[in-house]
Length: 381
Ligand SMILES: *Cc1c(COP(=O)(O)O)cnc(C)c1O
Image (tube, rainbow, N blue to C red; front, top):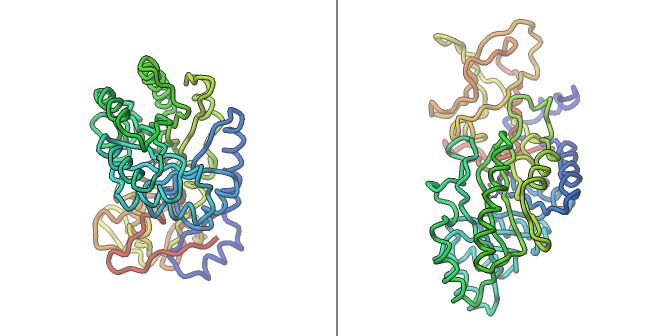
């Protein structure tokens, strides 16, 4: 995956750091464009997966919109030249300041999650003499079959508006003159690899649309969120997700009215595979069952393993050994959850070896912290 030249460059760079393969990102963006434009679908990139400036600039230059979940993300998207009429803003807890930022920038759409939020957006828009375009984020009660921390589309989750609230929502909307309903929004979770979950979403969207239709409402925009998973086990074999198959499911199963446009918010599937966390082995320590390879990156650089029990493929980039041994690959942070892999087979590993932790482009650098007063992780390209 990495040329010897690149490994030399890695060796000359202080570790740990993120390496982004911009060529792979570009190829991924082109694959998305090709697959989505076949149906004229709109794709908004979910900034929360990775809001690195260089990455955003490349994504923007390919014509993508932006999906933001906070006021600073809206600011960042505007700063990186995403056109305001392609910015959507979701989140269960939008503050007044964040709503004002979005109003001032005349974003395309607020994805709203509750009646009190609709009322606040209406009030703030009125103060500015504006009318805010909104979509209702609906909880479709579809199981995404993913880790429970990243499933969002079930009634027990905090996200979205539930079926039993629809009547009240319509009554509320009738009274609010400074918001305009333009869409319905859904997002069922993340790292979804069982694509039948998206078929389930389409069928539920069709039912919900019927309900609105019976109440004489046809919105112009349907937004089905993101969630397409990536192959964490075999990043080299599958560097680009199967976007053709993904978009085709929507084309096959969602029933759109003639004027309706379909929107997506993809995060992980866009940037996940282009990022690698590069780290150096500090010590190899004998353990009871397996030895520990203690590396200089930890949960402060990549939180996913500690947060979601996620596993990333790990490779020793510099060992020449033919002998395979088992290691627990752990970070230096004072937490037992600071562990990247248990009992992993690696070529014999020693102090100074470089390891690559693959598929770290999404929800990696953005979740970096300075816990233990560590330096904030840097990136190279
Ligand atoms: C996180 C998020 C996304 C992106 O999800 P991915 O799994 O990274 O594609 C899209 N929409 C909303 C509302 C989100 O919160």
